[in-house]
Image (tube, rainbow, N blue to C red):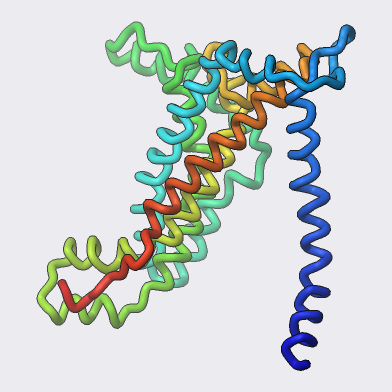
Length: 285
């Protein structure tokens, strides 16, 4: 009876969250899925039908898929390579008093609009910004704005704080006694980092990379402004299909394909990071 009562209480506690998640997550995806099998109405929008024509037309947006599947992982990797040393410095080197000040500085960009910060990069990367400075010192012909490089720079700048904080939390929780034990066993600092610190920080790394990657897969503002219409992401294609072309069935097919691609990539990524039975034995150092 006690187990049944406990199960009943657990169900009651989880019911509101389950209803909320169903209403806000599952139902919208089901609606988009239904729309993806429909047809384009005469005046735009959705016409009930059951056809795979929208999915057969996916190659028409192949460029957007290519740009997203190249620049989203590249941006995630670049942000990680910058964020990890910064997070390590904040968590393992800086004294607590200065740490809070530096963490505040990391989050300061979020105090202003993302749109305004991206517009600022349009000026920095534009003809009167870095290219003008390079031309002044004798390097001519450099073009940054409206290129994949500009989009990549905007991605790293915009999403760096989201990468730093999960890694920082993970590194801050590393048990000092394990590092001391590694030292006592004669491991070099590099070996200690590779075999103790890095593996123990992988949960934070996995969380940070997954958050940034998922958000980048749906990004449309940075490519629109810094890409100048020449570097399209899937997010830009969805904005065009739903809001401008009003081709809801094709937009839904693109959206569902994006969700499937993300699920596959994230699943493979999590399996690679957290392999079953994978443990770290400090005594092996």
